[in-house]
Image 1 (cartoon, rainbow, N blue to C red):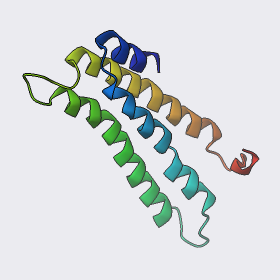
Image 2 (image 1 turned 90 degrees about the horizontal axis):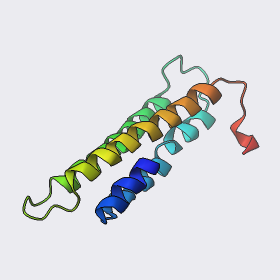
Image 3 (image 1 turned 90 degrees about the vertical axis):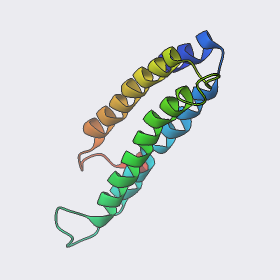
Length: 115
């Protein structure tokens, strides 16, 4: 989050801050799929496959937004290229944290209903 705020504040354009929406949306499909337990489906669950697909779309969108903002009209881009790199670095750290969460709490012993 620090890299995201630095990328926005130093260059005084707050458009990249919209990636926070993607940060909040990314774990939702996997958390919902974890609650759905289809018996007899084998190791590959269609609900879980859809959740992975949706999560990857959200993650790719989070990386694509700052790139598109930096590549907008060349004479007056929405954000500077350096701000784009700050946001992309922040994206890597945030999404690795989310992956770490699912690795830590991804086993069947943890009950998500405690939250």
